[in-house]
Image 1: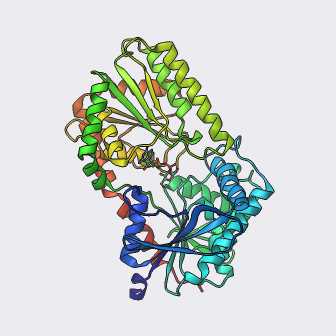
Image 2: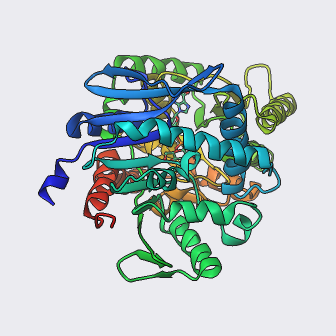
Image 3: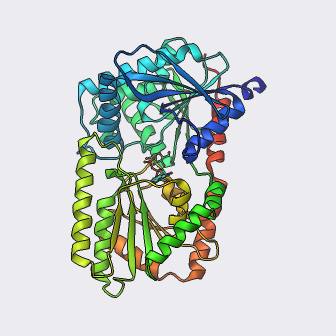
Length: 462
Ligand code: GDG
C-alpha cells in the first residue's frame, strides 16, 4: 500500500494541456497532481502528420512532463471529428437524431486507440497508476491489457452515460462496454450516469453490482464511483477580485446603464440548450412587458468543433434567433440579447460572472457543467447573483439551492427569470452561501484525490 502511494501517475487524454496561464481548472489540477506524484501526461498533440510514426514529442514545463504524438489526417477525421464528435458526443448527450453511425468512424477510433496504446506502452513503469480521461479513449485500457500492462488503470467519463435503450442504437455498444470493463475503476460525475452504465451491464450482460460499488460480470470486477468534478473555487474567488475582473465588471456595469445583466457562458454546442434558452428569454420578454428594457442577456458562446456540420447548423440557427429576437424587441437605446461568439481570458470571465445578477445555465444534457460552479465562486458574498440551473446538468445533483429548471420549457425559464430578478437579498445570500460551501468543499482537489485514492485502493490486477 505504501509503495503504491508513491506511484507515478500517467494521465492519458485526447488533448494535453501545454501549461502556462491559459490552462483551465481541470488542466491545472492534473498538472499539480503530476508535479506532486511525478509522471507523464500523454495524448494527441492536436497536430496532423503525413504518416503516423509514433514519434513522441516530450516537453517539460512547470515541472510537468508531457508526451504528445501527431495523428494522420484519416485518424483525425475518423477518430476525432468522426467517432468522438459525430457519434459518441451526440449519442451520449441523448441526441440520437444527430448521431452518425459509420463503420469507418468506428474503425478509425479503434485504430487511433491502438496507436495510442503502442506509443504510450514503453513509457509505463510497473508501479505507475494509469488514469485515462474521457470518451475518446474507451478502448485504451483493453488495448494496454492486451499489450501486457498489469498496472492499476482507471477511467473517468466527463460526459453523461446514456440510458440503455439509447446506447443500444450504437452498433459497437457492447464492444465499448466490454473494453471499459478492463479498467479497474470507472468514475462518473453523478450517480445517475453510474446507474445508467450499470443498467446496461446488468440487462445486456448479466452483471451484478455489489454493496461496495463493485460491478461483477463474467471474470471481471470493476469498481464504480460517482466523483463529481469541481473547480478551483479559491482561484476563481481571487480572480473575481483581480484588476482585470474589476475593470471588466466596471465596463459591463456602465454599459448596462442600470439594467440587470443575465449571463450565459457556453461552448457553442447543441447540448448546451442555447436555442431553448433564447426562446425562454423571449417568452419572458413577451410575458412580462414591464420587465423589458430592465434586463439584458449577455450570451458568450465561443465556437467549437466548427468542422462538424451540426455545429455549423447550431451556429447559424442561433444567429438567426438572436437577430429575430433583437429585431422584434430592441429599441433605440436597448438590445435584449448581446450575443458574443468569442472567448475571454479567465480573469475577465470572473468579472463578467460577478457583474451579472443572474447566471443562466440551461444545458439540455451536461456531464457536470463547470460554468455553474464558476458563476457561484465569482459572486460578491454581500450581494450575490442567482444561479438558474438545468435539472439535466450533472451539477444539479449537488446544487439544489439553485433555481432548478427544465431547459426544454420556455415557461419554466421565463418563470425562473422572474423569480431570480425579484429575489430578496436575504434569500439570495442564503442560497448562495449553501451553494458556495458545496463548491468550496467538493472542489477540483477533492475530485482529484477522491479518484486517485480510489484507484490506489483497487486490488492489483491478477
Ligand atoms: C466537459 C463536459 C464537464 C467557456 N467559455 C470561455 C471559457 N469557458 C470555459 C468555462 C469552463 C469550461 O470552458 C466549460 O466547461 P463545462 O463544464 O461548462 O463544459 P464542457 O466544455 O462541455 O466540458 C462537462 C466538463 O467536461 C468537465 O468534466 O463539466 O459536462 O461537457 O471552465 O469557464 N474559458 C475562457 N473563456 C471563455 O470565453 N477562458
